[in-house]
Amino acid sequence: MKNLYILFIAGLISACSDLTDVENNIPEVTTGDVVDIGARQAVISYTGNLDKGYYYLELSSSSTFQEGTTISTTRLAGSQWEATGLLPGTTYYYRQCATDGLTNVKGSTKQFTTTPLVNISSVSLHPWNETVALEQLPTDIRLGLYYSDAETYSDYKGLSNFCPTYSEGYWQMPFDMEPSDKPYLFYAYAPYSTGATDKTHIFVSTDQLNIDYLCGSSKLLTATHCNADIIMHHALARIIFHVTKDEDSNTDISVSRYGISRGLNSDLYFPIEGYLDVVRDTIDDQSLNESLSRGVQPAVNLSVTPTDLELYVIPFDFKDNQIDLQLSTGSSYADIVRTAIPAASWKAGYQYEYPVTIQRNRLEIGDVIITPWTENNGETIIINN
Image: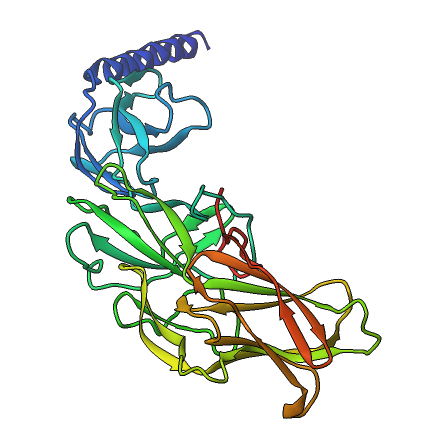
């Protein structure tokens, strides 16, 4: 029994000596360099005798490698390691380490920053006198984008007219877009149209619906400043007729349709369709017509309290007696009442409010109030404040 006890102690001493030898075989570790950096990955080199000890690399979003910030602790093999799943434009810290199971040896800390990607920081509406960030609105009105360099229009790697999405408070590009080496910018419009294939020309129509077409652009972006703040503005003019019934009238009057038309003795036709050039901010190739109207379903009964009737129109100018306001108060042509709208220049981004009083067979129109159009009537894109 005594001999067995001596053998056990001798074996334990021998085992401790072996561990000490392994510990002494771990060389001083040297943290390698980053040999390639992308937006979401980086390749790190390293040196060392990987057969002696357990070599690994720590990668963290914190320079102190605080608990909860370490992204990866990876055992090393070969001469390089690729870190994936990283965030664009983010600084990371790393160091090479080794252990023999008892002692940890850590190399110096180094850092790298992933390549930034082009991103949309904000989209806001510009009503001519100040910039107003809008509230978040439904997602069915979407943003369309065209990429262009600062000199001539050019798409992005053969891609144009793409649609970012808005989710959880952030705009997300439909694909990873690397910043260009030379200055570039975005031209934007809304609502998004999949059929807008003619480069930067968007079909717009006021013929049937009041659609708030918006267009705008970002400021110049660079390889290092690639977060776009896009400022939009209205491409159309907004016309509001505040219609009241004459207070002395005892007759019930209802309106089933309203609109504008060329005057009875006028030869002026005005635009109802065209192509919005989001680069030049013009509406070209216009289709002209003699009238533009909207139905009211169900017909609205007028009173001394104003009823607002709206039209969105492609900008145009007219003189006295060239354009009439028309209201349909019944089902026959005889039930149409009209009056001339005073000469005006309806400009994009402005709101024109006309007080209108109606009797059975007569309309009176008052002085117009012109203001920058600052609200969107619910027809706009999502805005990220």
